[in-house]
Image: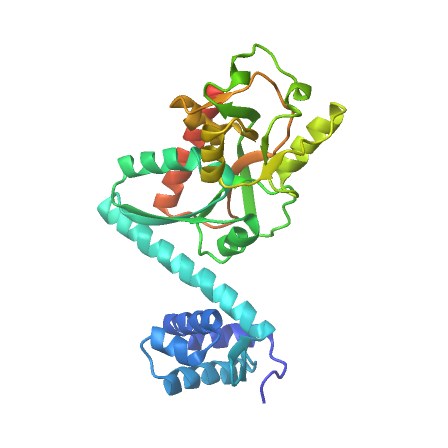
Length: 321
């Protein structure tokens, strides 16, 4: 009967003696697809063989891994644990393969990076360009998202490094982060904006201007609201709320709107003469930009090389500010 009491030693013996790499891949694929038939197709197996393999594993371990229904399967708590660790094992096997290949070829490998908005405009593109110049054979995948999406994928081994603004509260076990730099906030408008020629401005001078503001609830929006409140002012009401870099850039270039943005977001546009910083300082603590990796896990040579480039690029950016 399944789910009878089994000691950790016996479970370990069963896992070591019975589980094969193809079994781990099958468990992960079934867990991701929620359907044994779809998983079998992806694994180039027939469904009866996939179903029998899963039942054999369950019988050997004495636990139920998946709840079956007419709509597919869902993982039990046992299945969630086994699938999670199967992903990590498969990730380590991938890393072993890449490291062996790197030793043999010297410049090959693959790295998957998760990125947040703060790293996207400058830090990551510059670092990836340097990586490809150093090691053209390295394959790179960039996944953009939020910490809520990226950090679980990092824990599972699907992502090697997450780069961007570090979360305010870090509660993720098995992850470590390092600060690369702190980024100021700049008030910006189009080049040639009537206010850009002023030698000095205050927030009071800008209260009646048309603004582009970050969405409510974002860290930057909270800091902007606080800056106006500390100056004894209400937050500008004539505003568009938007966090899209491309949309905001176009609005700024084609109108007299102004916006508060992290400095690295607007610097490249400032360099080519599209946008200009306004002569007013805004005190805002957005938190540090940095990277997060899994603790107690060796990075692949390609990922480790990229990490070194990220640190060097961040230092160059900080020196320029």
